[in-house]
Length: 246
Image (cartoon, rainbow, N blue to C red; front, top):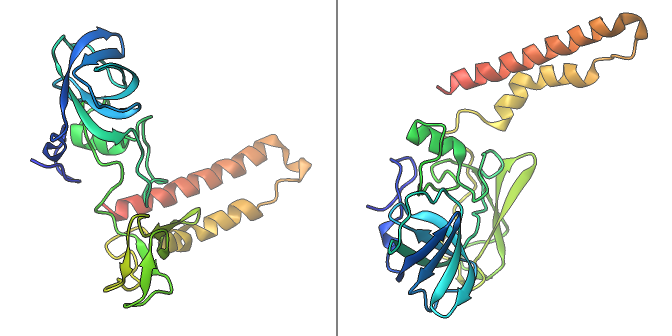
């Protein structure tokens, strides 16, 4: 059953099992040596064992591959399968990357915690790095239907937040004529938007940056009290926004 975002925790997707299998010959801590890996490439992403642990090929010798596994290898045994993916270990870039928390191989910790109901990451879990169901503000560039477009052309932008605006480019191996280009669209369906946050919390931010704390006559206790009050107001404001989205 293929994986999909928002569903149950999945392991390795069935459509990726068309790759060749090798088998484990030796396990030493996080390092695994696998045989039957002829044709594999350096730094190729592999799935090790029946739990589909994430690993990366770091050495090749004949049909043997030395693999660095990025998960706990307890329970791996000789002759366990090693699945090639024909893809390098990589990260996914796109809207939502700045508003998430990932581990070292870009697994979204918050999403995994919600689905698994545990603070620990299940072995071999496969979860999309970015939320494919989230809507973003889309703005097409100066292209119209019938225009010729080629690889690398920037045909749209997607606004994530004030720190990041993503530029959407045509893949480098693609070219042709535009038959349809979606019109500009806002973040319909999202309850919290930058405009709402700015409207609701703008006054608090204004107070934070405009407050004067230079008067030495106030004393340290008075300054600490001012900062504490501002902090409490900001915290209450963000909690109110969170409550509206539940």
